[in-house]
Length: 82
Image 1 (cartoon, rainbow, N blue to C red):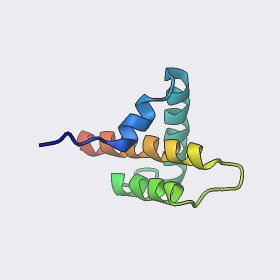
Image 2 (cartoon, helix red, strand yellow):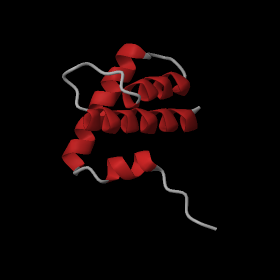
Image 3 (tube, helix red, strand yellow):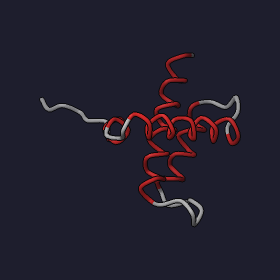
Image 4 (cartoon, rainbow, N blue to C red):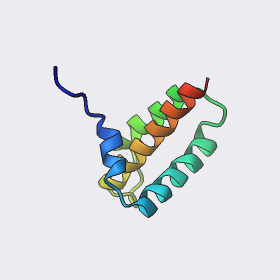
């Protein structure tokens, strides 16, 4: 049986440590503004919107994908905390 690869984790782990830290901080800020106290599914929804192309004109597609991956990581972490 093959190995299952989590694309989000691979994408984040490929980032240099300082860039990953910046992405996680940005994702945490977005989560606190747009989904404070809401379940992990709300973060998943934000991530889906970003990776689906719903972003402002100043955000590149690659940054949106990485930011969505960071939001999903936060969602998974908060899901295991409950």
